[in-house]
Image (cartoon, rainbow, N blue to C red; front, side, top):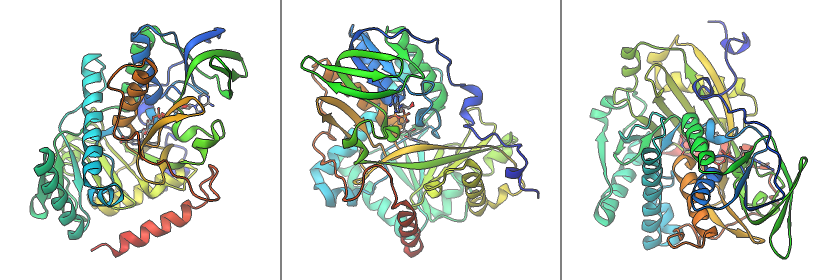
Length: 431
Ligand SMILES: Cc1cc2nc3c(=O)[nH]c(=O)nc-3n(C[C@H](O)[C@H](O)[C@H](O)COP(=O)(O)OP(=O)(O)OC[C@H]3O[C@@H](n4cnc5c(N)ncnc54)[C@H](O)[C@@H]3O)c2cc1C
């Protein structure tokens, strides 16, 4: 078969943008002063801006690109708990804190589901749970042990699916079973972003798209936010730029690791072909270190595949080939299926594989969702909104996590090729 990636027939942008094109907002004349400047119009920034605007604050959201251009319109739309084994989290922070972090993750899932339903955002929200696939028997046993503990401690809603039954969920012989997490969900990220943007602007927040913030200056009474189009004074600033922060806030640059993540979408397929791969029709992800994810498209006409093997890629042709080869390795029944879209985006990781929320130099930040921002980003944005309002209920279990950096790290993740090699080695040793 001729390599489709050389033919120019593949769209090198997110499949999601077909149905949810990036909004072209009219150029906004910048005001002189606002109550709150939010930098970044993704899920995090909008999560805060909606809460603040509804409380009557004058909010201006800046984005360097079109609103939602970052990860918020490129993601696979899985809404789930952060992928870090409970045993690891327990070892790092102790059992009570590990349980509090799981509860907080569940609160984030509930928040985003509730937000979508309350605001009536049409984004194909499917509350059907997610399937977590275990590649090796050892993974399966760890998931089962973790589930037993979480069921006992907090009534975690999930069920194990043994290998003999897993073809009901995901038709692949590459796995040893898995777990259905009933409270998790999926949606169309691009439509969710567009809906959230519309509600936020409807509540009175202004959005200055294509307006990059170049510098933030702290004064006695607040901040001056500088852009190439002029400067705006703000009482409060919320930095919501996640993996795309660059050098704007050096403290964050030293702590957030921008990692590439990619996706591919197949050509339209008959329903029986999709069911032959994902009979459960849920969003599925595996627990390899270099994990893979697969789901039906929201309208059930295609398969959308993604994964962490694209961590070091900068070209959507390279990542697309890598993902395609991997998809066929896991689902050989898809041989011959064409790819129509391949895309990349940046995900913010942290050295502890945990999100962080807090303040630096008087500015608020929330960042580092490690591939789980669809649930956590709007939730932490909302919490920061509550903090700015000095409202109750703004505390989170993430507040007191130490936000670590490493020597020689200033924002350029030069060590990623070595990390990929290390993950590959760990995966190869898993039993
Ligand atoms: C391919 C891919 C798949 C993913 N899949 C999932 C998934 O299935 N489930 C899940 O939970 N998460 C997933 N994620 C991660 C999730 O999308 C992110 O965690 C989340 O969208 C982060 O939202 P955010 O608002 O913090 O950042 P972003 O959406 O990245 O927004 C940051 C914004 O800040 C703007 N900005 C940056 N610098 C400046 C500046 N100086 N001035 C003004 N604006 C600036 C950028 O233009 C950008 O629009 C995925 C990500 C990718 C890339």
